[in-house]
Length: 267
Ligand code: NAD
Image (cartoon, rainbow, N blue to C red; front, top):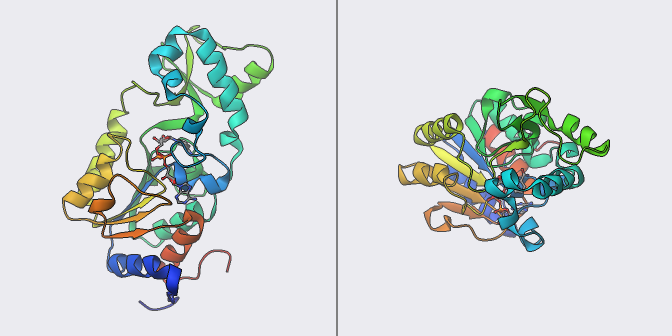
């Protein structure tokens, strides 16, 4: 590689090994989970301070949401307080824009619902959202979509469980709840990308939520190199060529800088 070169020292050995595996790859698929956004202030689900250490996931099933107005009231209240809608991209999100601009990245397939990949500057065509997007709400009857900020304004003005303005149906965040089917087009596009990729970088995911985790799994099983960047173990560690343990906000910029021959953003 020419241009910027990464000099590994001790703790950076994982990054150096990842650079060796990825250096000649031209069709890199990036797969992201909640861990890429914790440095933007959004808690993950299964990490040590994850949401599931405080809240019971059984409360957030589709059937509960549809049957119980109290669940819907609580859900909108939690969205309002979560800070997801106001979060800013961090260094890892921004580095992926540089990887996309280098022409080496096929796309980002994300489990995240925070919209931070688009907010960091990736075009919509470069992002495949497997679990929806919290910035939108959808009517379960007429499928009309409304910005979540409008729904939350109605909540702030006293409507605890706002109904669809078009048909009066139940409004739901446009995200995949437990028990809910995956978006068919997004999943099919993600699997095509998995088969097309010569490498996958998985960032900030336990790789334990299926079918989403089938995307990096199938790519690795069919010959793509798999690099995992995560704090903590993942379910697919056995399939990985390289595991880099540490904060995505530091590791991803260093990795991308070396792969694209440019200094890390901010330097
Ligand atoms: P997860 O919560 O199961 O796991 C996140 C992993 O990232 C953990 O292993 C954690 O230790 C690691 N991690 C945390 N901070 C990190 C950092 N700074 N650098 C590197 N690793 C870090 O996440 P998941 O596998 O994505 O699955 C959870 C599901 O919850 C997803 O399906 C997603 O839809 C949803 N979710 C989304 C958001 C979001 O949009 N930001 C947040 C929480 C949950």
